Amino acid sequence: MAYYAPVEIRTQTYKAPGIVIQYPQVTGLANQQAEAKINRAITAQIQEMQRIQQGVQTGRNPETIGHFEIKTNERGLLSLMLSNYTYSVPMAHGYTVAKGLTFSTQTGQSYRLSDLFRPGSNYLAVLSAEVNRQIKERNIPTLEGSVTVQPNQDFYLADKSLVIFYPLYAITPGYVGFPMFPISVYSLQSVATEDGPLMTLSADMA
Image 1 (cartoon, one colour):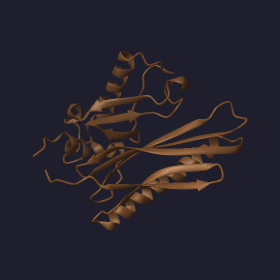
Image 2: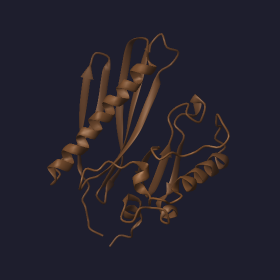
Image 3: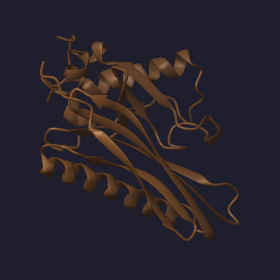
Image 4: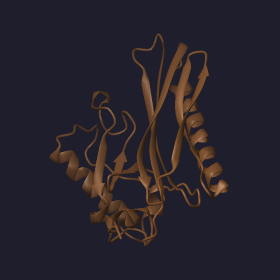
């Protein structure tokens, strides 16, 4: 397996009346096109999260705080989580939007969940079964019975795990927060795309 050094991340801050958003930007990549592609995708996602908040927090004087977390930065993969909290008067409480982004630092490709798995495989059934197993094991209250995983499901990669997560109120009551389900990459090798991110993370170090 080829060695790829972690990429350099610079924290940028966007400020406007009532808004402070910290967000990551990649710098120093040998492939400048890949670097620009990744940074554009991050910026576009932040803008989309703001658009979502405008539809939820419809009161006066909205206050927004945005943060990010780097989940994986190794082996040519960058996976991160963006969060955006907004409160506006006189709403009963604020609302948080969270999104995961995963990239190839060599090409700038942004991965969807479906990109991680072999076409025609039963990966959705495998993931859904594991999510429901964890719900039962962890006694997580859900709004409905069985929970499903979709091809465009939110996720990030962290510590040799695929972490599936859901928006607030999507499958659980609000007090639960963001329900997250870590799944070992080793348990997904039979359905993972060959030479894809899951197999890259599960490979032994040379």
